[in-house]
Image: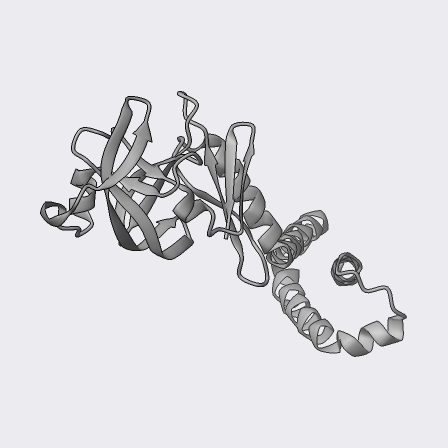
Length: 235
């Protein structure tokens, strides 16, 4: 029975090597993986030594349990090897099931570039739960707005003295022309994507129902892409 369990162990080790992509000769493989082989055989031998007494007369149970434990170990190794791909899959699935407005990290490149995805709301708009000057805000994505535009109440929340603002910049809206005050924001972020020193406007009281995430933020990203019910921001 010990020989059977040892053969199972060696077979699973060989399966792991084949999944690992090594196609060299056996001698080269043994030389490159000798440390791993010794460690795996030592652990396997310890398991076999400890289990031979417990499974005396129950050889089939011993083989089944050995296969289960070694299979779990192999699954953990494969999962760790493909952790980046699995994380991307998890993020994409989360983007389908989380409520609109949540930003989901969907990609990270070796150079540090990241991408987040937003889902369209029922009214057809994309709304991001981002931050301005480190304070959480809800921002309606608007490619027709040349800058980020804030409501006066939210501008005050992020530290802007709204009493000192001068509303001199004309802004065209669906209700006609109104005026806004130019400001600069220390930072605007959506998920992990952050842009610093952002040009923005503060709308007059009552002129704006939602904060706008305009082109002064979007154009400084690497790209943004609309696809069906999703908006992907890359930076």
